[in-house]
Amino acid sequence: MADIKVPDTFLWITEADVCDLIDLSGSAQALEKGLVAEAEGKAVNMTKTQTVWDVGSLNVTGAQFTGDGLVGAKVWSNANLGAAPLIVMHNSEDGQIAAIVEAFALGQMRTASLSSVATKWCAAEDADEMAIMGSGHQALPQVAAIAAVRALKRVRVWSRTPANRDAFVDQLKAAFDFEIIACDNVEDAAKDCPIITTFTRAKEPFLFADHVSPGTHINAGGAIIPTNAEIDQSVLERCDKIVCDNLAQVQKGSRELMEYAARAGGWDAVTPICNLVRDAKPRPQGADITIYKFMGMGLADIASAVEILKRARAKGMGTEVPHPRRSKPRLT
Image 1 (cartoon, rainbow, N blue to C red):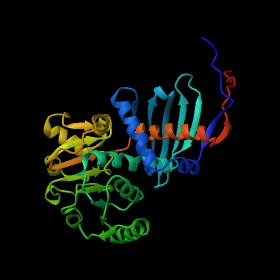
Image 2: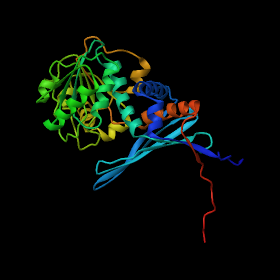
Image 3: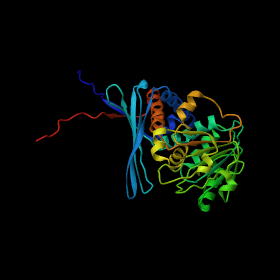
Image 4: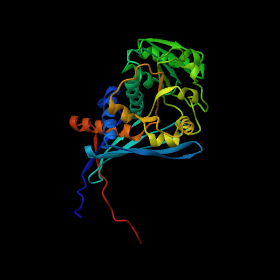
């Protein structure tokens, strides 16, 4: 076997670089491209792996985009609500480092892109109002995600903690021109609202079928571990279309869909979003409820990282860092 030529350097792409190189729209376009590649067997997601301790978790996701000559993994630890995620990109032909990408902003845009793409294909085309349930750090990007694909005139906000809700309302008012309404309860937030996004740490379901009007699309982004749930089974039983970001991940991580599949006798009714994007079919006429359950997947992170790396190379951005060189291990 010929010796692998080790490159002199690789690119380190900072958070500031990421934000200069790509925005939410660009992230969504990269995601759709990556999802079509996945549906066609040209990209492969790596199921998330995790280990936990008393105050945190270590997480790894990834994907291969060998058509672009790249594979990558995102690694991060959550500890006492702190995190510093990095994506390591390798060349798929020789295994050498192509880039390291600081990935906090990338991850927020990726998560927003997941719901933006799902809403594009699942929500009614004339939907102009949404409810956001939850007021954490993902809430603002989630509103931006929907505003990118639907002409919103009003956003309703509900959170379990009124002070957090009111602070988030003020944040939204400073960021957007459409009407922002604070809601005291789930019922007021959900009633006759065509798009609902949930992003909470709820342990038990709070959104029930009698809260949801016909024609609604739901983006369910919280409850990403089997102990948690946001959506009651009564909602899923009304759904004409159930979409997930990655089937293997929801099969082991989504309590809501695991319970639904057990009742339904299988997973046939759950469609991966890559098939939705490949088929490019809008919401069925007369559909009652559609739902998108997303837990975050490595393919989405790496799809953005691939695009960011291409743009960085084209624009001469990023910092050249010396590539690791092998040294002989001390075996005795």
